[in-house]
Image 1 (cartoon, one colour):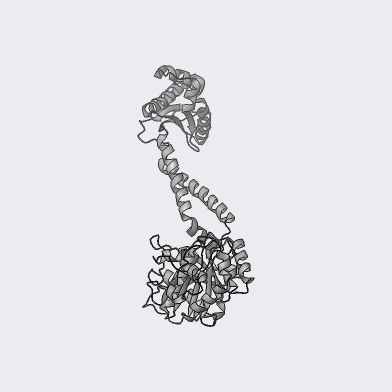
Image 2 (cartoon, helix red, strand yellow):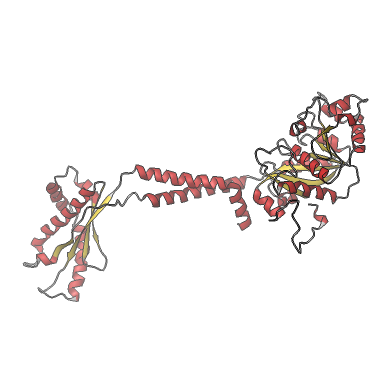
Length: 460
């Protein structure tokens, strides 16, 4: 397991791990609070057997230690517990009483502990003292005359316990949180194992696609709106990097660039709009064409009306292409919206008139960016690609699957279009940070001293 892979998994699924941690800890804490507390009281008996009064030899100490082990088993025998139950007037069976008490021999000592554990601290104290007292009283007739008081005596009576021994709420909470974290880690590992979606430039390269850039998730208020140059880095810089990657191809001008994606909701329209703005900022005249006649979206991004557009040009040979250009509100960028949705979109896009319209628009701009429908949805993108120019695929991180991206790639290549590569949209912040480095971009940003120039062959 590579550390970078593990870091990526944690960065992607941290919220699942956090939920597991919180859920496990909360559940353990809740259960612990519901469990009745248990108190332990301990009475200590000292065993001191000697062969002669007033003298204690090594053999006497060894004998006492052996007797401690024997007495530990005898301390809670039935005969002892019966007398304890009578003395304390307990309304419980001897089996229950046996579960509450125990004799513990302290290793390498002459000490015998009588322990009692109950939910009632007073009962625990009384039980421990009663068992110790009754056991000693029952053993004295079997001890040598005159030495019973010294051979077995209570060294420390049980006192009222103040702190319960169970449940250990803090420990249980920590163990529950750890268990919840392990369960969440198992779930994330399973999800990661089953998740084969595209997430990083390395995934694109394995599919034979050049990576032109990685765009992070925009803020919720900005998502889906043109924003190049208006949002915080690295998002604004991402589109400039894509623009640079396209320029490095050295394609002839005016350039016709088709922007598409394998499926819906993968960010092709947002990418096309922001890329148009990035080219406009570089003093290029840009015409942005919404060729998604079935589900047009660009006019919404720029808050424009969709009454006249590409459909009007295609259905009216006398229409003037320049008259359909709408100012986008961004420097050097004009928009040709889709217009009314026709019932024969594929036929209109495949018509000779479409080529005429694109040629007219090319005369008005340095670059024509065409937002097309998804490749795997309809035939429109392949038709548009066959008209010439270049194409750019957009994949959404964590959504687009490699198989679909490969099918989209092959479909575009079958149209003999110059496929420049792909852009990953909606990438996790860690991926964008790795891709662009830890520099701060902006108007005042400078390249770090000694930075090496990128190899143009990388196409990114």
